[in-house]
Image (cartoon, rainbow over all chains, first blue to last red; front, top):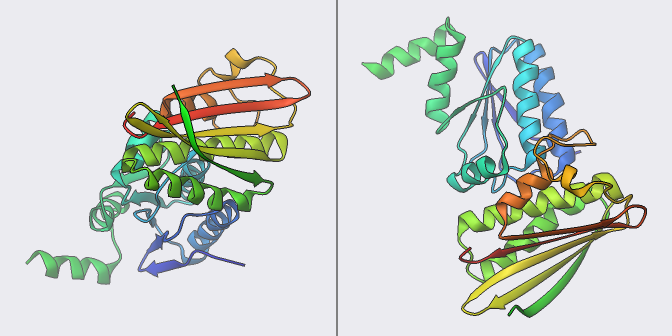
Amino acid sequence: MDRIPILRMGNLLLVTIQIDLYDRLATNLETDLVQMVNKTEAKGVLIDISALSIVDSFMGRILGNIGSMSKIMDAETVVVGMQPAVAITLIELGLELKGVYTALNVERGMELLKEKIGNYDEDLSDEDEDSTE
Amino acid sequence: MKIVLSKDRMTIEREQDVVPFRNRVKEYAVKIGMSLVNQTKLITAASELVRNMLKYANGGVVLIEVLSQGRDSGIRLVFTDKGPGIKDIPEAMKDGFSTGKSLGIGLPGTRRLVNEFDIKSTVGEGTTVSIIKWKNG
């Protein structure tokens, strides 16, 4: 069965959605992510939706569910990379992405997650110091 | 006056039909040169309506028409199902109303995304929803 890959980066999980999801794939992602949060004890989930050409109420609900489920598993969720046309459509449709944080791109999303999580994985925070010098 | 330039028909029976259907609508929207924002609105509206059709009526048929009116062109989508029908259309068009497990933004939300929206329903016979998105609308 098709699966969206979930990458682990320190205490974060990274998901890049590259194709327009059909429903089964989206609900699989929901359960896979929650299980991965449990297995890896991840503190943050970053979902890149830059390749999604539309987000309808079904997809919105999946993203919201992922956020809420992760939250009760003690992980924060950030959705990044939303296309402007998608954002315009979402607002007119009346859909709020409840339960998730959003950021403009992967880089900003990572920063936001680090902020939310607080004491960050050691080797990753070292990397961070290097880059600010 | 609206002139129908082309007609296409697609049967929706399973959730796997949603993505190919969205792609088909996108092809027509691109062909008439619709802007990306309008394309996204149209496809999102189509996606909501096709889901309603699957959820409440186990599918149905969608007619895809390319229209021309004066200098403008557009896409008309007509969703026809033989489901249970909607008892109270004004109630179903209210924000936050849902008999299913959805968020209740389907119909009113969809209406906001398109230029023309028409719904007809007979209890026990089925529902027909027709939407038009103009290229420059």
